[in-house]
Length: 348
Image 1 (cartoon, rainbow, N blue to C red):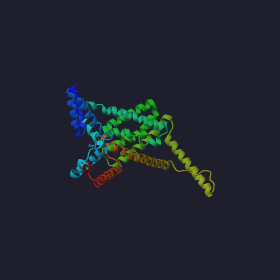
Image 2: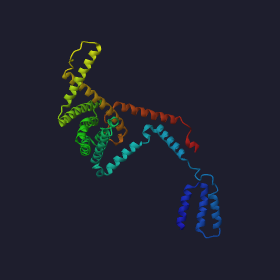
Image 3: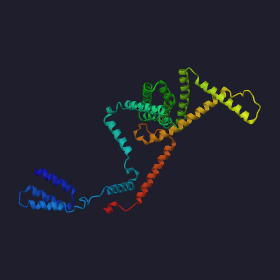
Image 4: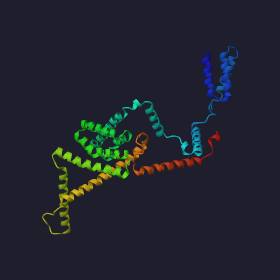
């Protein structure tokens, strides 16, 4: 019990101000002796410890806000003396460094991580496609459908991106149906694979955009052919005939409005002209879709760049501009801090 008492008194002395240390030592001496002055010393200790009931015992220590100001001031001094190299690492850099160290110390622990992550991203593909098709949220989620494929491709490589797409298609075929899985493959999956592959190969951004647009065009045409074979209908020819009829009806209406002689029928555009117009409109739609998909994916993936293993993938050029703006804002904050109030160390 004597040692326990001295341990308690030592811990109290570590947190009490220096002028209260002699009171704690006196309390320890009182506990270790059996003289008649123990009661008197104990009363003195109680009086000394609780004399300042309305004040804080830790008044000699900085508060939380003062500690924050001290840290900011020390970081500013480090920046002035050593440049930007002394800047504290961000939370993203810390997570990336810890992941690298963990992978080096435990290589077997991450052996099956690509397969597990590919399966999880395949399940996420199914969930997004379900919300988009069954809950009618395509207008909101259409830009995020290829994102899981692109994340896996830039993290583990194109091989696991293909595995992610295959896993998602299998789950969609079981849960939603074969037509939904085929529709996802040709409408979104092919474009996502080409976009992520071009980004991982560090091709110029214009080629990345062209690859995504080409994948969207080819996927749409193949999807029409597959669904037409399933329903035993030429969907492309049906669409072409509908366009010809619409153009003929529009020409007849304009002729009647303008007062031209009434003719029984007005010849519409030829099939070749309609095919060319439909292909041009299809390519424009694919370019529009690939552009905004590439833009949104670049912004999101750049925010989580500490998770990617592919170094310097090809992002959309606006991402680099946004990064420069963030660096300028950080420099402005440091300059304002340098012109701030007087030193907190002088105050304390």
